[in-house]
Every structure is written in C-alpha cells, then in structure tokens.
Length: 398
Image 1 (cartoon, one colour):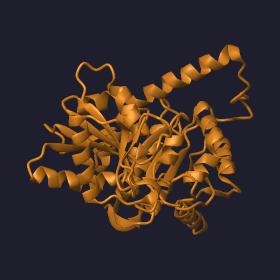
Image 2 (spheres, one colour):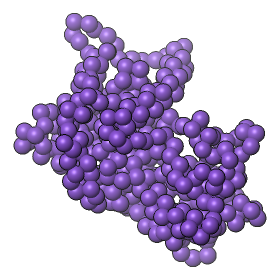
Image 3 (spheres, one colour):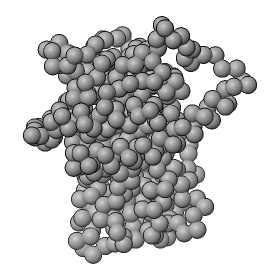
Image 4 (tube, helix red, strand yellow):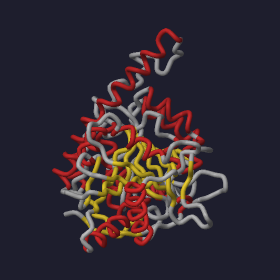
C-alpha cells in the first residue's frame, strides 16, 4: 500500500532519489537546498540507501563528480540552488553535450545582489540555454513525482539528457505538506534499471567530450539540438506512464478552469496554486478567467501551449524574474515568440512580481488579472507591469 506522510519538498525529493535506488550522490549544501543532501547523507549513513555519497568542496565539483559517475553508467543525483547553480554553470553544458542523464533538484533561489536566500526564478532562467530538460513543481507531491519521473525520462535511450526538477525555495522546500509515497514495487515497475549504452569501459576505450575544432563543432551542436527537441515525445510519454501507474496525471501545459475563458493567467511553480484561488473567486463572480500552469520549460512545449491559448483574447504572463533590458519577463518573451505567426493569437501582457521570496497573496493575483485585462483593452507604454513594488513604479517603459 502507498503511504501518506507529511514531508517538506526537500525530503520528498530525497525520498524519490532513495526509491529510485540512485548509485551516487554528489552535492554541496546551500540554502535553501541543504535539507536535500543532508537527508540523503543520513539515508546512506543509516543504511537506508546503498549509494556512494561524496561530500565535495563546491557546486562546480559536485557537477564534475556527477559527470564522471554518469559517464561510468551510475544513476546519479545532485541538488543545488541559486548561486550554487551559477557556480556549476559551465559544467551544465558539459553534462548535456555529453548526453549524461544526471538528475538535479534545483530549489529555486534569487541571485545576488542584493544577497537573498529566498526564492524566485532568476536562477532557472539563467540556465535555460544549457541543454537540460527543465520541469517545475507546484507542491511537495510534485517534488516527489517529478524527481522520480526525471530518472525515467532522462535515462531513456531515446533521450539521454540531464534533467532539472525545480521547486520554490522555502515556499515548498521548507513547508510540510501531505505526500503519498508509493510502494517500491510500483516504482520498480515505472523505473527500470539504468543501462547507459555508452558507459566508460577499459575494454572498450572511447573519447568523451574531446576537442571540437570549427569544422565539426557546429554539426555537433545542431545534432544535440535536434535530439533535445525529439526528447519531448518521451517526456510526454513518461508523464502518461506515470499517470497510468500512480494515478496522478501531469502535462507540459496544464489548464485550470480555462475552457471558454477569454482571459488566461499564465504562471509557473508554487504560486500557481495561489493564483488558482484568485481565478476561482473571479469565476464565482461571473468573470471569464482561467489559468495556465506551465510545467515544462525546456524543451519548450510550443504545440501544447498554442493549443491551450488559441481561443483566449488575453494572456497575462506572470514572471518571477527580470530579463534586464529586455522586452518583458523571460517567460513572457517565450510566450510571445511561440505565438508569433499564428493567424489568431491573444494579446499578451507581461507582469513581474514575487522577486526574492516576496509573497503573492490571492489579492495580488486579483490585481494582476484586473490590471492585465485593462492593459490589453486600453494599451500601455509599459514593457511590463509590476505588482507589489513600493513607490511610484507600476511598470517599466522602453
């Protein structure tokens, strides 16, 4: 039987790594991710998990160790947050380019300066072009589910790409919620043993990540891009298989009360659940409002997004990071790009808020929807609007 237990998201992700029977964990502690490697180290020390745990001296070293372990055919796991993710930034490209399916939990944290230990999505946006599959969680159950799913998809022979599982620092990582843990036999049915087809072997010498002169580098990167985009078929299949076995169904783009709605609010991560309450309140008053939760960030779900937005008049995109000097938030820019060229497309309004861990209440999302609808109807000189910013600033102009 499955077990229902109260867990913070950090411990939920750790339980998923345990039930996946990982071979190696290499991680460096950083707030608010520290509970993940602490719990896994405890599991290894107490004999709950038969794995090698390597305490490294930095996040750069953590990812470097993961590269070697994955290249040798080990099921490999790590975790980090914010500045730690940036410290390993250049090694992230190596993992994806060498097709090493490392699974990493990223407990989202704002980037300095000013120094912040609290969550937003600036770290996730900073690594969006590193070639990792990126998926976002709304709650602690999803932190468990998506971590388990990440091994299934990343290790698929048709994929072989590393996967980041994102959940919000403190809003999820340190908050206890009910989490259903499945039986081990269910996990084993969903997740086969990892058999890396290109594992390093002294009896079969091969070169990994060698020097690439100009006459081959371009072809190598385009081949990587083609393979990365093809991974979405397995991503969708993996989500469907997860639902078949565990009864919880996920999709790259998830509508909420969106059918027939003229205005759609688009969100990512834990704030989607708060935004849903605001949508419920507005719908109870007869307003034509719905929500889109964007779960899959990379590879970007163009087809699914266009399908869910095709009948809306207005889409209000809520970003939790600033794309400095850009035309709006990073997520909003991608939404506009995805819709460009469509014969019928909604007006897209960019909103930014929730930076550095600042909370968003239901009333804040109520304002976002009202103001976003007003901007769509009347126009605005603002490149993006803001919510919850003290002072006279309500938006940024070009």
